[in-house]
Image (cartoon, rainbow, N blue to C red; front, side, top):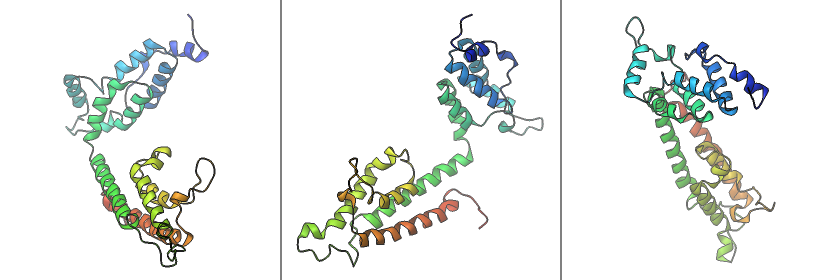
Length: 245
């Protein structure tokens, strides 16, 4: 029997019939499925996916059978006692390229009240970022001690205003979030609106387009700190959580 590696050979000896597809053994099943996928042990992968499909099926008839198993002796629906949380399945399905598990997992997740709180909280946080952009960036006036305020040249007088306009454009385009893999992070975006003013360009030079004077940058920094603190204090309300203070 030819194997690509020692691990591959060991996987071929795994008895998939001994695996249990319940909450307690999910870690074992997950690890073996990912290894079977990586080392192309196709029969083992197929056996595990068949076992997982009992809880994350393709048909409504199988789904109803799965739901019946979630009802305890007293008639109470308790899926988490017998079936893995759908978020873990979603992560496994993507890691092992087992996309057939996703529809049922996403549906199961959509019924979760915590998910509804998550979506509401995400909406509030996105709205907060939009309000911050409107109130603190769009049309921002230079500070009273701005070094460019008394410039005779009109373009020079608008250096700091132009910098904040460029920052606004950067945030709206979401370039920095995409580059940093934080495109859905309003708290980071607010902070980055300040940090990008001192960030160098790809050649290691100061990026003058995004750089306001020290006085305007300092005043904006105060607004950023206040906004981030305000944002954080609102989280319990947004996500429907009683944090006890």
